[in-house]
Amino acid sequence: MMTARLRKPAKQSAAARRGKVRVYSLEVFLLNGPISERFARKNRVVSRMILIRGDQTLQDLHYAIFASFGRWEEHAYEFQFGKGPMDPEAPRYVLPGAFQLSVEEGEPAAGRVDRTTIDSLGLKEGDRFGYWFDFGDDWWHQVNVEGVEAKPPRGKYPRVVKRVGKSPPQYVDLDEDE
Image (cartoon, rainbow, N blue to C red; front, side):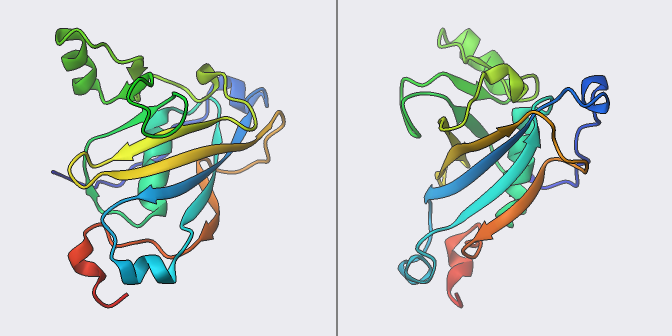
């Protein structure tokens, strides 16, 4: 387990400074994880709308999701681009160490989260993909591409612009008072 660290968003690229970078509206839904029945009854939908620039990476998206759901302890994660979340045949984008391991084991990942930009994925409105956080507790998310803007509004990215439902505690034992 790793402890969360504060992280500055990626610096704007030259293309972003010239206004040639798109901004993606991504709605991140919690599909599954170790939450209590009581929490689930009170929070039927838990989602976050995140705006992210196309020149930012999947790693930047992870940090935005991590913070938006109130998580504090880092764990391994990956993004999956298949027929839907939890698709075992999906191309996977993984952490640098996991990428090397996947190559050595003969099951190469599609790419590394720290080197894969959002623009490079060819996403369009209506697409969806999976985000899996903490391979022990198995927090599964579906990420829906709600929009792509050619002329992004000024400001810092990524940023959360909408929250639905409370953030579940990262560990279910802490859910007793919810």
